[in-house]
Length: 193
Picture 1 (cartoon, rainbow, N blue to C red):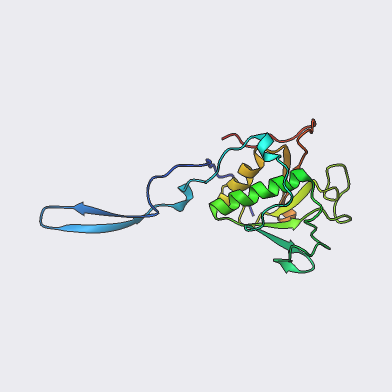
Picture 2: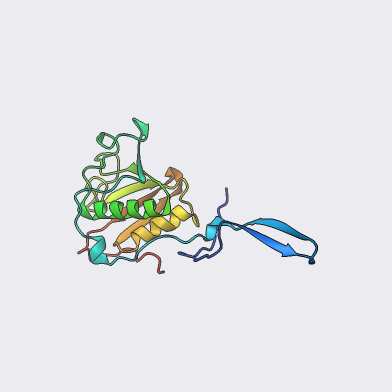
């Protein structure tokens, strides 16, 4: 299957309603109504810009209203307290802050993300900034492909963080590393808005 890049813009402002009815008068004696549909792709994203300092502010846990959890043992909507396969308890503070910010933006924009890999040990490659050490999270690309609203929300959530994102098409997820605030190595600057 060939995928092509689709240009998009963030936060496109549209004043037109999703459905609008327009009346046209052909003459003073007759008129007709035409119902047209405006694409919902141009609906604006709801977000507030935050600084890197605000982004990395310490949080005890992350919101889960628009995040779902999948594990190979229990499938979709694995209970959050079950962490044998997809561990969501042992994330570092930077990863928790990112997931909380992602959940907030997802809730505001009515999209949902699925966590498919967490801070579990033994399933992923080892290293300083690895899954096992709590710096990485895998998020399913289902519904979050290039140009979609979820894709834009994901990248807006990543913007204030020092991060690295790799789209693993073979595994159908985004492999996301959230580096600590004091990280001095190479990282993605994200999209500019």
